[in-house]
Image: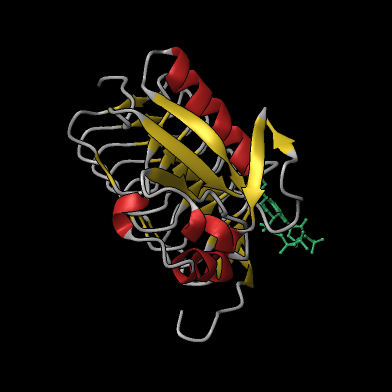
Length: 230
Ligand SMILES: CC(C)(COP(=O)(O)OP(=O)(O)OC[C@H]1O[C@@H](n2cnc3c(N)ncnc32)[C@H](O)[C@@H]1OP(=O)(O)O)[C@@H](O)C(=O)NCCC(=O)NCCS
């Protein structure tokens, strides 16, 4: 395994969001800059906070819609994942209309990502996370601090893997799946589209699309409301 940053050339990054997930990603951008990567956090786009307000020392530059007015060399990250709201959050990101080439992946320099792991555009890998050989992540997926994505796992688009969660070998997390902190997924298990695995849950059998599961062993306790077309 090797530690590395995904952003190799000088780059300004703007984060959609703010306090919470945005601030966490900002810490990794700062760590990459401290480690010598030629990049900087240019600011945030936020629909709730006023322009000029500062988050982690960087300014709110405008609302989500204002991305179109930013310089063409600015890249974007949108860590907007939320349990039970993944269908609407994914729709929100897609509806922005940001061209694929302007999304950036941020890989914290303290993470360990295997050289052959595939990381899609717009992903965020937090500090002390590990992504093992043969694993793949789609677009806009997040692996939070200390989480482990084991060998040969297939992680789809817009998936959230919370801090210290363990996704065992050959597991599959389908598009929009949400794995809360400290959950564990048994090897070869599949977590369905937009399904939620609760805090500390131990998944030992496949989780259906849109199911909410919790406990050890994990059992279904609810469902996620689908968006039309999701
Ligand atoms: C799984 C989860 C989505 C369920 O939330 P919810 O649908 O609002 O469900 P409730 O809190 O009403 O709980 C329903 C039942 O399941 C139980 N339950 C909920 N989460 C549980 C968990 N993680 N483990 C065990 N039982 C759990 C509750 O105790 C409750 O049981 P009861 O009916 O006997 O009282 C939520 O508990 C969760 O884990 N959210 C993720 C939070 C997260 O990721 N935070 C970190 C962000 S970085």
